[in-house]
Length: 277
Image 1 (tube, helix red, strand yellow):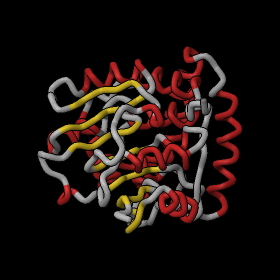
Image 2 (cartoon, helix red, strand yellow):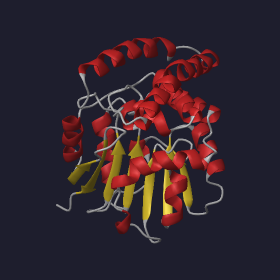
Image 3 (cartoon, rainbow, N blue to C red):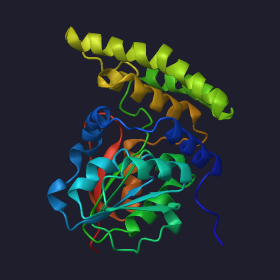
Image 4 (cartoon, rainbow, N blue to C red):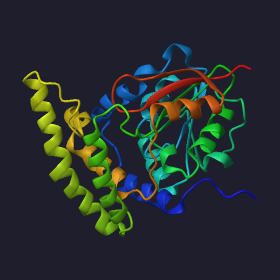
């Protein structure tokens, strides 16, 4: 039997994350949702559509998708995460929940009208293998939206230097017990994320482009969002990053075509359609 394409400690960590930050406030999530889904082909989706949220976590994106579709399959390997998702999505009767890794998911191949997987596959040992499994679930011609951490391929060299320094810190923090990891990442959000985000906002207000300021994407986001992402970034054991070209190549190898990338943050968000051949 082939080994399962999942890291148990990473799954455990995300369960703890979503249990700590349950994403109950829909207002602050809407801006982020609009960023991720700005290139999603909503005109192809209706109340008869069935699709999946692979690695649904707390269900924070599913709550915005569920009202527009017939059935939404929320899949995650963490029981803690799924419990939070069930709570957050309790108002919807069209959400199905499954605790599973992608290659063991019960969804039949060629059965889904759409799918999305946001911020998940870069935390899996074999990102390409997991992407192929997601695409298998889609009907020919169906869209798949994905977000993978970028390798700063569209940023100045200083971004790579800052990332390298932060990654050294991540490798230290991610091995700590959660009771220590949580306060440390809160401190990082307060000392690093919040000041840089507010500096970026100030620069935009006075007419200066802030896109090359690290963490400028958080200028319009709340501190709670920063807390969540600081824990996500520094508390996760397994992290991979990819260039735009690498992501495009993986998408093509997975059987996707008509691939398009979002021109705005976060990087990289891409949409592709399962090949009909």
